[in-house]
Amino acid sequence: MKKFVAFVFVLSVIVYLNGMTAYAQGKGRDQEAKEARNEEKLEERIERNPALKAKIESLLPPGANVKRAASGFRNEGQFIADLQDSRNLNIPFDQLKAQMTGSNAVSLGEAIQKLSPGMTEKQAKEEAKKAEKQAKVTEKTKPIS
Image (cartoon, rainbow, N blue to C red; front, side):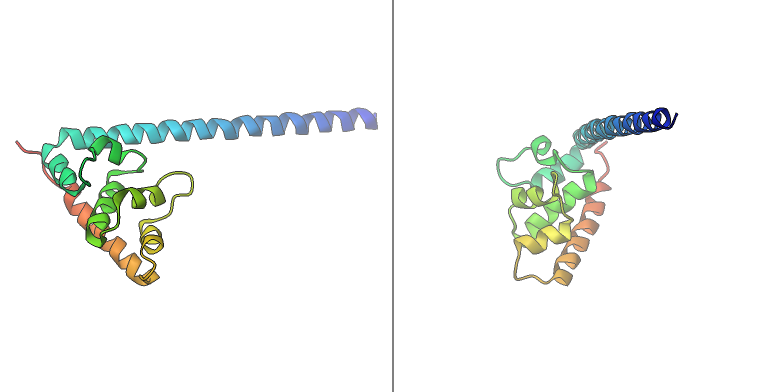
């Protein structure tokens, strides 16, 4: 009887852990799909608002397009703040983007500090806040009627 109870217990643990693995893998796919939808929405919002698109294009490095530049960012504000700080601090946009997107993403302030070693943590955070405020103003750009 003890062997039977132990067998059922071990079997239950295996089934439970197997289900957890499948659950965790499903979460990853769901997150990837959500990020893809967010990117689509970001690009669509920019495309629907020609005035906003013009402002963003003026911040992009020469030869870059909005769609490719915006890919990977979580939201419009993060994307525009990155563009603002790239321009404000003369840090290449692609380097800032690489720090802020992907599997080892860091905050804008951390990215600025990594790419501007002479800047203190406090200065980097202040620059990030400044760019985020500028991004909010840019995001409020009304469509041309």
